[in-house]
Image 1 (spheres, rainbow, N blue to C red):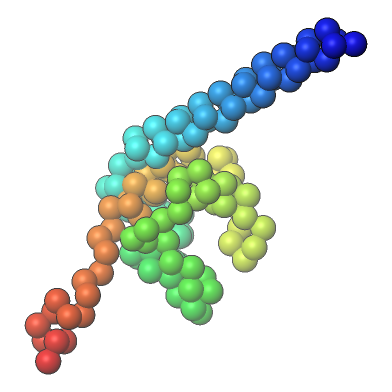
Image 2: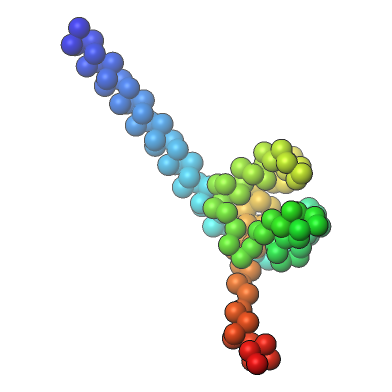
Length: 129
């Protein structure tokens, strides 16, 4: 019985190792896809696919249209962002690959990452009076 348990245990460890490698590999590929995006092309895709209509031209969000969902300057990690865009079942429709290519998605993410943080009002002389 001990030998059967050991063989089963080894098989489980092998399967678990394979699953972890697949998950890590997918994460690395997703990060490479996100890193390969072009911010300039992303701005164009953001407008072309209508993202601006709810999220504003700078990803700032709106309480009226996106329930305040702010996309930039700190977007979700790429994996979470892509999963939400592809599978949303909320007020935002899902954007499947037939509508929004993986390249456009990576470009949009690069665009959102490129948006600078807003300045602290204490750093703006006219507002710091």
